[in-house]
Image (cartoon, rainbow, N blue to C red; front, side, top):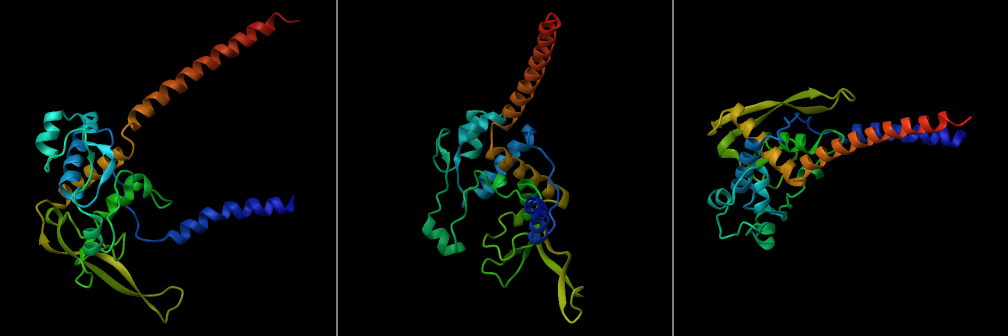
Length: 254
């Protein structure tokens, strides 16, 4: 029993250790727009225009966008640029060889990126939302950009025209554990040039893009949730009927 008590205590301590070691930049909460059709449509537009040049979404077909209210004509007229068909997968023309030469690695497929980034620190949507809003100019990096959530990131800031150019502000503080050491603490961003959008507009656009990425990871999510509610209600009704039937049956048994 002592062994099992120690084992349980150790396992209970593991999540705290993981969270303590995860550290990193604090994540902002992303507004849930996964059921907002207008937001999803705008997110799909941003994804095709800014992400699909380098990142593929090989598990998604263009015609699946009809699930968020787009017609075949709207998909053809606004989201297909290089001769793809509505039934084609969302692939990129960028070759793996060129990607590795330009960025040092092949850009990951984004089909389930929102699900893969979920962690103890927050959901995948929170990670993406914070990541796309914390780029800053860094001339020491090969691409000229860096990121607070993903330090030394290989991907340049593809949305910089919308957000504008910023630099990061860092302040020096004494290490609380060792006063002989100095640590650099994030103190915000300094704007260098304005973007096409205000801060509020850019944050809203990123929220739409993240909502689309979240939806793309499981397009049938809303249907699954509705079916789940119906199944739970059915099981609750069935349980009630079974309980009353059981009571009626045993009432006659002496």
